[in-house]
Image (cartoon, rainbow, N blue to C red; front, top):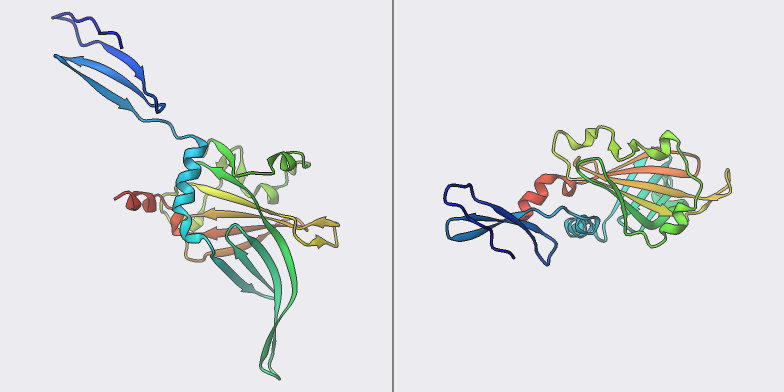
Length: 225
């Protein structure tokens, strides 16, 4: 690093440097001891993925169910979504699970950053196949996400959101109305205790909201202390 020239009456000069880890800094010559002022490194998509994967580890192996009306639904984190009917017989006091339908198996993840400007697709082994699909601009499919900007999340209950995650579940049971495989979009959001909500989309597509405190920025701050 070149030694900055000094003048007894001039203000300290600065020299920019780059470290091997990708961070940038400035050498400020104050007196006889140069000081390095580090500039925070901007997080990449991979940085966000690592941080969120670590934060969401408690969800591994978790399944949640909701029972409303005729149909019930079960969501398993990064695994499957299933629709079924629970038949309760008062005569025999038995419970039977009927008409089990797969709404998709976990395939890809879309990550929406806190600044709500950049939308990054990560953890997508079959991204090329998805990009080849015919685009759908319907309001139901977009589910409030357009060009990285998000609709207000009432489930956050006033708490600051860290981010939102959209998981895509594909290759479910064939839908007889469309003759297409069923698929679902699961949006992980902050922060309500009502963990599972289903919003009807197109005939063979479902939208599911999963709310968890792990998506709150408070959880990140507490985990670092």
